[in-house]
Length: 188
Ligand SMILES: CC(C)(COP(=O)(O)OP(=O)(O)OC[C@H]1O[C@@H](n2cnc3c(N)ncnc32)[C@H](O)[C@@H]1OP(=O)(O)O)[C@@H](O)C(=O)NCCC(=O)NCCS
Image (cartoon, rainbow, N blue to C red; front, side, top):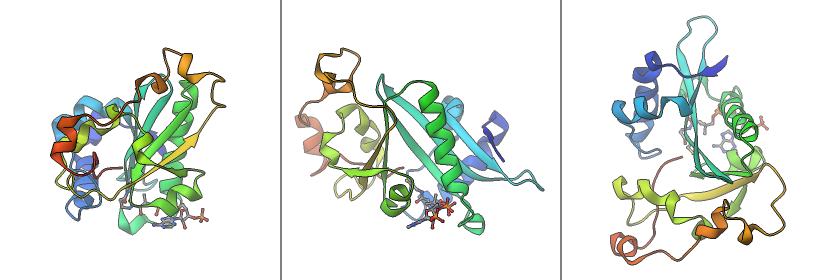
C-alpha cells in the first residue's frame, strides 16, 4: 500500500535510493536531507512485511511547477505497477495543490511516457530546477531527459502571471555554464 512517509522510514528510503545511486541511476540522498524533506515523500510498503519497497517524492518548485523525484522501486518488486502508483500518488498530491504541471529528470523516458509525460527540451525548465546539479558528479556530461505532464490547462497568458515560472525563465547564467557543458544533474 501507498502512504505518506514517516521519519521512521528514512533509513529504508536512504537504502533504496542510495543503492541505485551507487550505480549512477539516481542522486545520492543523505539522511539529513531526507529528514528535512520527508514530508515530500510517499512510500510503498509491502502488505505482509510492511517493508518499504518503493519511494517517490513531490517537490514543489513554484506556483505552477513541481518535480517528481527520488523514484525508486526495489528490484525484487519491479514490474508490479508500484512505480506507476507512486508517481500517481505524487500527481494526486500536486493536483490537490492545484499545481499546473509536474516534471521529472530521468533516464527512464519510456516509463514516464507510459504515465502520460512528454519529453521537453530541458533548457525550457527554469534555472531553479538545476540547484542539485552542483552536487552531481555527472554535471559536466549530464544525459538525463526532462519529461513533463500537464495537470491543468495552461493559463491563457502565463507570462503575465506573476506566480508563473514563465516569469522566471532566463538563460543559463555564467557560473553554471562554467561548471559544465550542461546545467544538469542525475536524479529523478
Ligand atoms: C523505473 C522504476 C521506478 C519503475 O518501477 P516499476 O514499479 O518496475 O514500474 P511499473 O511496474 O509501475 O511500470 C509501469 C509501466 O511502465 C513500464 N515500464 C517500467 N519500467 C520501464 C522501463 N525502464 N522502460 C520502459 N517501460 C517501463 C511497465 O512495463 C509498465 O507498463 P504497463 O502499465 O503497460 O504495464 C524502477 O525500475 C526503478 O526503481 N528503477 C531504478 C531507479 C530509477 O531509475 N528511478 C527513476 C528515476 S527518474
